[in-house]
Image 1 (cartoon, rainbow, N blue to C red):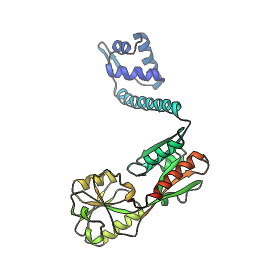
Image 2: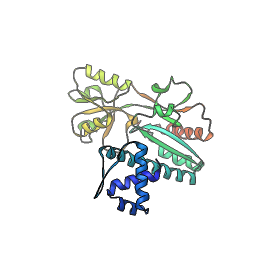
Image 3: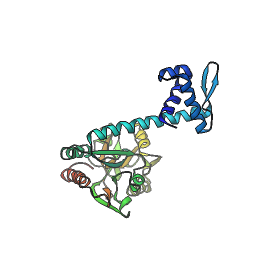
Image 4: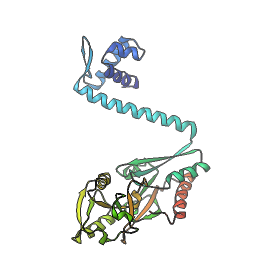
Length: 295
């Protein structure tokens, strides 16, 4: 299967007419029909039913074309990114972050780094799974993670970036949003959203509050669902500061507790590029200079 056959198949699925599809792609109908037949022979099933009025997708064909469209878009993006890279850059440094995880100073770090290393591209990779597997498979160069997740992994360097505290998240019109600090007693009588893949330190705080017997709780499957429930007035939640996207949509108030999170950057020991070390140093310096910044 080649890209030409993929394009032919997608166009025929769109027009459901061999003549019109061939015309749209500036090829003869016999050539077009032959390529579609070659594709069907290769995959081993009929993609289209032929009839006097044109063509119709088979059930298997509908599913197949859906994957082809996605594949073609991925290929298009890969080509475009490759063209951009080859025209401007000589090297690339990729950094994995979980969706909603914040390296707040990442844009500023990229800007400063680009001033001194214009030939190196920084590529953030936002992933719902956190990116650890891709990092361990050498698909990314830097991993933003909690220290507890990576401190026993062999063959990596770990750089402490910042310590993140726990915050209460509420709607901005909630009376608690007017406080400078939240204590356990402030939450008595309230409903607390819990769960959603909370890290151990946060689960410990949640359980301590629940065990007081003075706080109701509601299980939530993930952080985005939790935020939706908070916005709907179903409760409040506790979250690490590194999840704050600083969109000003919610109030984030410091919660009084001893628990915190050590946020780190991990790199592969086999990666000795000077540019990588310089970028890590840029990020660390930005955080060291931002002592008063809420994290």
